[in-house]
Image 1 (cartoon, rainbow, N blue to C red):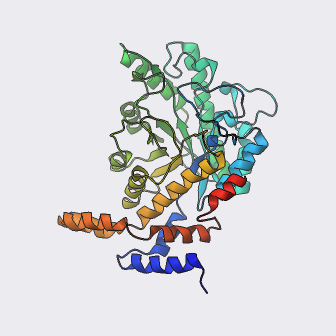
Image 2 (image 1 turned 135 degrees about the horizontal axis):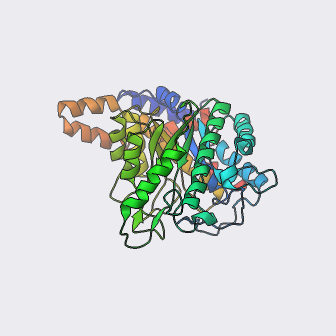
Length: 411
């Protein structure tokens, strides 16, 4: 006798077949799409460099849930638990402050691949890829609110060297794991109030980026992305690394792409609208999936309309090789393991929802000018038994479908 999940899936498969969608093929495709899970939800971005140091650069983890990892062993244990609750292919994104310093403090402008060799060993043991992020914040040399675009040449030189070394580490990780490691740069640089000379800092940033990017690496090992932002907390009036700035840079440099964080835009802007502007020019995109509530508040990702729309756009363009999907949020008000897993599961669900869309039929209606059927079928898709297919996908991957949160809370 079939169990509940098997019975439900048979019904769903028949219903989707009636609109020309192969659910087995959709699940097989989802198996090929990695989601890069950021490690810093587990400990509120404390890292291993100096865990007691507070966050700066407009970054804050708010909430008082007691589940934050208290040491390195607990950190790895909780991260592994979260990974076990997410079905399908995964990567883990690191920040430079998660180095193994082997018991001695290591400044950021002297970090080496050796400090991340334990991470490469761990990733190989757990069958996941790695992505990387230089940490241009929470440091005394970032306290002036400027790093790569600072007027102070000593501060700029420090961060330029940090960026160079992070690219070297990313190439090492990519080569060790046989999978491209995305090296994503975000800087907090900007002003809180009215700004007179907006161009000077951007010219300095171009020069710094050129120096950071000077050495060429095999794109099979690492590619750089630069993450824009509309504003930062305490830097509301001017952000040096704006979306337009990084777009222009990425369009004129190879092995370089824009990172779009869904919380880094005006609330009326939709990242789903922006993707094909890059894809049409043959560019790759790094996507950070977050959930802004009124502003860049880094709430845990859920299966919202915005997330579903972005993943549907990727599916419709079959852009899985060109759009790299990662999570980026940190909520200290709920259990950290559950938060880590919930966001990644929501992205996987949104991808599956998009893969179950009869995109070919909808595109045909659009080309024919049949906008009535286009809209009607898009709406009818919302009532399809997507959840039954998701349950089967979890079962196939040995991951709890419905009661996963109880496992997360047990740790």
